[in-house]
Image (cartoon, rainbow, N blue to C red; front, side):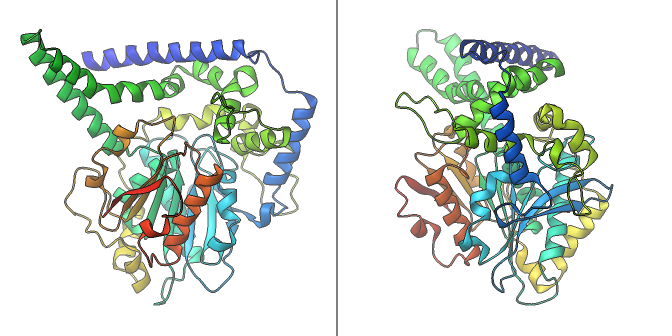
Length: 473
């Protein structure tokens, strides 16, 4: 009880400090009272029309909706395969994005030759309905239902030569991907997971660092002249402190609602615009992210805030965006988006519904295609709690500003099943799908999976400079 109170007080104070720093930065660059110009409004309207008009086919893709059992709808876009391949690839984005994050891979002729490509908007993002809550049960049940629905729609279920299923994810989509690969491995033949911590592994690693440092410090109190022991204790806890500094925004997002909402709204969505600048991967010699051009900035913003008023009820199709999408449009959906940080998705227990248990069991004992979709790992395979039971390819940018590599990669091999890999991009940041060189690597990884994994992944990535396959089980 006392430790919980201490943690809550620390979280409140640290989150408030981070919000104060964000506000100060917005004041210093003149954005705190900034309002969008008429030109910016026009560019945003054009971008929203381009990507969110349901009567159009943005980038050659088709808008569609998937209805859940409770009537809520998830928006997704579809790119049908160009040959007889029956593979299915499902793309899941993270914060603060939408399906637009994947536009480069969705328009890849190489990938569409070998698979139907589907990119979904997470609940509460883009054009998808929100959920009553964003805990593990609600989100994982929803995403499992979606993937099962896509399997039924695009993958023949009773033929020997049916295709395989792949899940490609980023950021919070990858946290979902990790959990599904651990707790519902039947859903896909391979999970390609980019730019996220694995909750179970990272939590266990942090606890181990704290325990080790605590023991060292306790010993040091008995031998206070042992400078070496003190240095070792501090060195051991340093990765945890570095991660805490990189995760400061998470504490700000968990402040009481008026403060956390202000964090996203201030300065004409200043924080979102900073994220978009960082996501481009372009920088001045000083390392400061470059300003985006008007069109580029508008398209980045519409990828985060979703459709606007002109897209509601204006389509010639029978479908329209759900009412919850219309309600959150004035705020860009910020209060809804940060709920995945606030409501227990990261480590909360997933108590599967009876329907989910039955449908996953059917995949285990079903047709030859369904059996082949399983990872081949036993459901009770040895490993630490939370170990993945489906084959996974984990992709990280070594310069990702959100994660401390030592924590995110330490002992991760113990959590991976046979046939899994870890790929580290030496010069990459966080938004791999839209960083030019990184996107090419990610496309190569997905292409390798779709083309049957005929050669070792390491051999396929040899021509990509600082890219290394650090684990290949």
